[in-house]
Length: 525
Ligand code: SIN
Image (cartoon, rainbow, N blue to C red):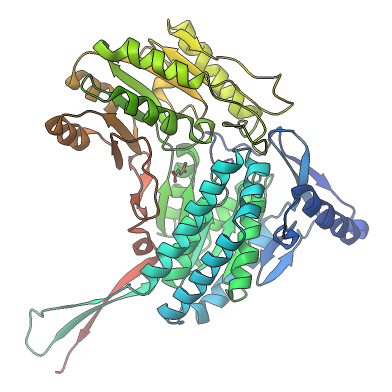
């Protein structure tokens, strides 16, 4: 499943499957493992693995097929991972189920200590982990380091949550009875993650699962598997026992793997981050066996600038929010609404800032923005820009592929103004570096525009009027609001959306999603 695209695509121009004859398989693997590690140029090359991980063992695919992973900035090959399928997925689920029998009974303090070790190992290897992210995802190294810090913070947060999974007692309605509530891990969890945060979306889910006492089967995205595999290596070093974390890598078999992860009776919960269409499909699969579900799906965040806003702060907020990850985050501003009296000033200051961006290879020091993940991502951006221009929008900046930067999938940071409400870019998530500006007159009008979509993950607005701040924050139909800020993401917040943006919360309320509440009545007292 290509989790950030609206189709169940099993092909990608950045990824291809190769098959090795079984007889040469081991030798090829040995060669690939060492050459791949060299390509990454890490201080600690043991972080690079070219295999999946099942029941405590690094594992190849049974059929010998491989997926080639490339760097989106250079289109050079980074290495291979196994193309696994149904058999390996079932094996991984079985291993997780077996491991749950002991891991689920460990003390919260034990799990806390292991998670904290895992956290410190991440900190210790932060440069290497960031380098892996930059190479496979394309985001600039400084931003990748920010992601590693964000990613590690989930482990710290959940370690501290593990020891606070309190139960309760409830005064009884009947004499001679005592009511006690305990919380227990749900069991085996399927974790399906996207490529836009190759590290943080793993720990956001895995940290909660481990802290609660669950075991996991992870399917990382085929575009960015190496960050996940490096985390599995560190989890092993931290002392996570065999079978507690399993990783199945796939691209061509994504439908059968994803379906098994969401329908297998032994799995009791799925956690998915990705596009809304794929989320709906997985939710449907999971419903057959009534699994618990956490879904963080697509957004289409409104970003509103009122005429009483601090315009400098609003411009800074828009830059941070719109262009983080080259616009490839689910909480990125997608529709920028600016009140008419400050519209021209905001647009020209935004354009001045965007003109200073340096798009390029994320490993180069002065690069501020990297490539898009693959060709399909560029095509979607191009479609949205062309559609907006056809409908009367004006091109203020950018608006084209950047072929001069390198062979990779680069697109110019772009600003469009006067974008009509019915343009595709205002109707669906673009997931690219395009700021779409639309003018509005009144608070009532802009709230109607902001809420006129089927999704509701994040929303942002800038205003110095305290009454308006409360009104608009309450009125926006989203799960998370940023007022006078463009950056909201932290491990400590209840991260999640409303409407078709998802179900459940990760981060501060995240551990709840991995636990069952059990009521026990003590009679005969
Ligand atoms: C996402 O894009 O899926 C997550 C963004 C974040 O955690 O800030």
